[in-house]
Amino acid sequence: MKGIIGAIGGDIVGSTREFNPIKTKDFKLFKHNSTFTDDTVMTLAVANWLIKDMNSQELLVRQLQYWGNIYPDIGYGRSFKNWLGESNPKPYGSWANGSAMRVSPCSWAADSLVESQKLAKISAVVTHNHPEGLKGALATSDAIYLARNGAGKDKIKNHVEANYSYDLSRSVDEIRPDYSFDVSCAGSVPEAIICFLEGDSFEDTIRNAVSLGGDADTQAAIAGSIASAYWDVSKEIAYNSINRLNFDLLNVFIDFEEKFM
Image (tube, rainbow, N blue to C red):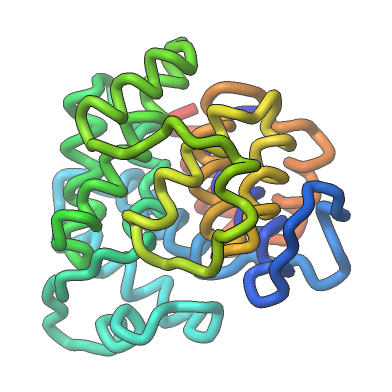
């Protein structure tokens, strides 16, 4: 299975390690308290926007606020949580990785790299209009789009480095010892992409991401969103992830699969 299941699966696997960091790839993927967080809810909010009207930025704002207020206490940053409560919400210059963790549906709904970039910009700019926030979303969405269309890892790496000036030359083992919780795009998106580049499967990619010991659910959601365009997500991981979605979220997931996959 390919698609936005990668972001959802990464989020759920990483959810138990967000505030209990580990520095090893040897861990149980799903625990009794593994659950979806803001990464999944916002990914599906973007998905629902694309299903309904991808040309309406106003609708995107309404979808983000609607789903965010249905699930208000699942890990949003303070500024975004305030944005959810505003009657006339405006972008607030965020450079955080929320733009990258929710962007994956854009790459699956698009028919070209240019369209993917257009949708990714819209998905980010309503909140994350800081250059780093936009860059994180675009680098992630480009990597997903290229991967889903058969690009090799070298092409993806070279494209991201050339267009977004991220240093992707490091290894996971080099990053891990000194890495800590970092919600910025600049400090988490390159690392997530490296986790994919060094991975040998979807599962290995999210194990890489969680093992860094940082913002584990978002790190794994971003890395997983790229990995699930390159490899199939195993039936076990897909089932264990989908089975943890509430009914309303599951319906959005199914509708997106039917329309775009």
